[in-house]
Amino acid sequence: MAVIPVALGGRSYEVHVGADLLDRADGLLAPFLRKPRVPVVADAAAWAAHGERFTAVLSRGGHEAVVFEVVPGETSKSWAELARLTDWLLGEGVERGDHVVAFGGGVVGDLTGFACAILKRGCGFVQVPTTLLAQVDSSVGGKTAINTAAGKNLVGAFHQPSLVLADLATLATLPLRELRAGYAEVLKYGVLGDRAFFDWLAGNAAAVLALEPAALEQAVATSIGAKARIVAADERETTGTRALLNLGHTFGHALEAETGFSDRLLHGESVALGMALAARYSARRGLMHTGEADAVVQAIADAGMPSAVANLGLDCDGARLVDHMRHDKKMDAGTLPFILLRGIGEAFLARDVALDDVASFLDEELARR
Ligand SMILES: NC(=O)c1ccc[n+]([C@@H]2O[C@H](COP(=O)([O-])OP(=O)(O)OC[C@H]3O[C@@H](n4cnc5c(N)ncnc54)[C@H](O)[C@@H]3O)[C@@H](O)[C@H]2O)c1
Image 1 (cartoon, helix red, strand yellow):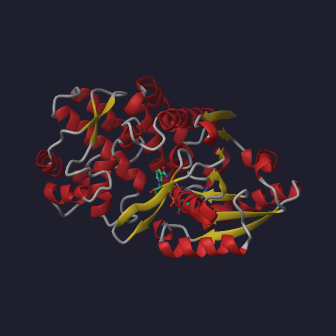
Image 2 (tube, protein in one colour):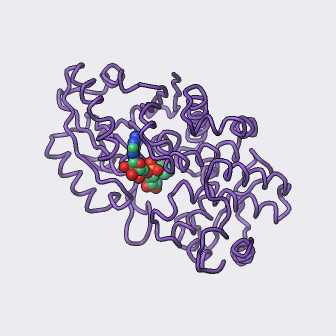
Image 3 (cartoon, rainbow, N blue to C red):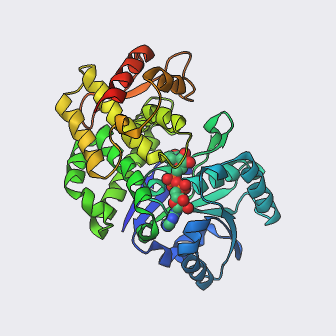
């Protein structure tokens, strides 16, 4: 069991990490619950697996969970679902001082967080992340958003939760592919800023993916600690520190766009591939030793994730992937910042990357066998 503080002055909160935390949810949530009825926005699959337990624990503390179920999948991060949810929250009489529980993965966390950011100009919310990706990344840091016809996460707000409860036992029902996709974000913290953690993961990836309790807790708590430090240093991504968390995301976003944001490539898988490309591109530019880039690619492959774009079977060239990048929301007055590497654990923000050069590099990568 670990408790990690996210230090943000008046918006500070704690992230609790441990097995079977849900069994103590009544006590942990008590300071945030003012009324007997507790609005819970839940991913349908996560709720089917763990909702009964959560409901029983809340009722032990004298609370009744009233549930708004969200259909699993990225399409639920929509204007239509946001309207349905805010209408429901208003119908439930949620007030500014109340807290809503987001129970599920990043989709439910992002949707609920955004609804709570705008409901009556802002009400409270608590994150109960049930995917590895949500536990180590999306539930911490206060980024909330929905998707629009123009792209992913283009409408949203910064709105910090009041508490995060990451119950490691909920991961037991997560499909292996989703677990691996979340592991990409764990690996990312090592690659971007913590060489010792990267080396530790090399020997413990199998244990983490097998949900071995001690290894899993160490991996999740270390990841959240890294995210908490970065968010505390640069809450609104204005100084460049928080931008380091985008390692792998610019390349990855282009691959997600090319595969239609579909199950062909999960978000975490695109981050893994994007990290491999960022490492290989850094080596190609002479910023990082080739052997170090190979170690990043190997760590991704060892975790059972796609690590080479040539194997994706894409019918496109580098220029087309770069076109997708031009629509990236990080595009800034004609330039696109990239997170590159000087070594494992040494990510930095590069503003001098020529997109033509990236297109040539991607052509080479797409042709590699
Ligand atoms: N806000 C942020 O800072 C941030 C950061 C990274 C990603 N994101 C967003 O997060 C989303 C991806 O999140 P995700 O990977 O958690 O995906 P997700 O929320 O779509 O969940 C993945 C799948 O797992 C299922 N699921 C969830 N918990 C389960 C459980 N315990 N047992 C069985 N099945 C379960 C869901 O039904 C779904 O099918 C994307 O929309 C991405 O944009 C946000």
